[in-house]
Length: 130
Image 1 (cartoon, rainbow, N blue to C red):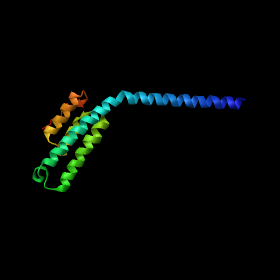
Image 2: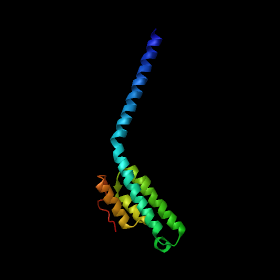
Image 3: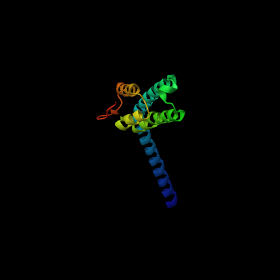
Image 4: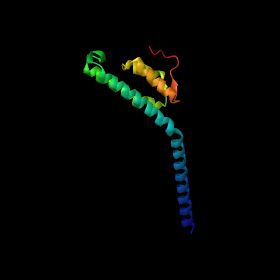
């Protein structure tokens, strides 16, 4: 009888522990989903405008080298679609990375303005955009 009692106790503990872990996970997800979704939406929208602008430019305006053009697109995509959403905000390092990737100032200002309008974190104090 003791063995059955111990098994039931242990099973109940595991079930209760699992239920609590799932509850906490769902609570964290629910608490951060709206911010993450808004940040992803803004970054995706500005990234799409950036890519459309690149596609509309002549090769001389973008870069003489197709490899350099591809590298600029990849670097910008990494920052827009991976780094900023992972950080949950735009930092000075992101802005500097976008500038190094060849993203024009107007697109960066669009990004910062859209994030600010959506009430999302923008932390670029002390970073010159020019």
